[in-house]
Length: 336
Image (cartoon, rainbow, N blue to C red; front, side, top):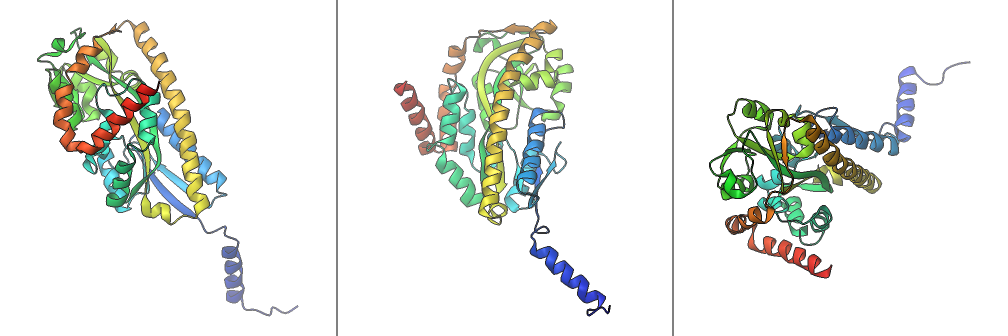
């Protein structure tokens, strides 16, 4: 039997047939974030990526880069905007460098409960903020919700039950106007320190206290070097999963829908797990005997100190933006 084609021609034909099946038409998206392997967030991001690959039949692959491998949170956000990175998961306040109004959901003592916050963040009151992020910065959400938890204060030795108890204390804060203004409003000295250096700063008494959600306080062992935990629940932290708009638009509609659906599923699972961890880890801190827990600080007194802080920040966020959010909160509460 004689070969009717040369070997190069056969290879070319086979390659063309292979490409025609769509098997080689694979898109890879890069997902960079700050969490470490073993943390709930990373595990769920990895599960999200695995599900996308599996359910797309290999057409779409998400490669996950944890632990700030590709840069710190603010760097990842800039990469996301430029398209150097496809997906990331910043906290909402981190977005303030692009759209300051994203600080609003973190406003101290703004929310009564998580359901209220989630409804407003997803709803029409926040929609112009998301639109600005899309139109000006080429970024769109896969999910607007990634529950992180209620933030609480810890201190070395001082029992803080009311704002006056914080007078003169140095409190570590993220480098963000909303945290700086909040701590200043309580009469303390806001001290920005990178997150990775917080434990050492507490241990060496560079600062007197810090504030974070219970899972962070527990997993980072801040309670081991802080003698007091005040359950102020002063601020709700919500994160996001965002994608570069151009990266999203290059995908077929069914793949866009798959990303959104799997991000929503991961978000729902995260909310359930993280809320359970808040309860169990607080109990673990209590049982450790290392930290005195003040369960009922005077939250109303702390909240009252925020009225002038809101006034100062309103112009930063945009008066209309702030008015829309407050009006929606009032509407929801009056409807109950």
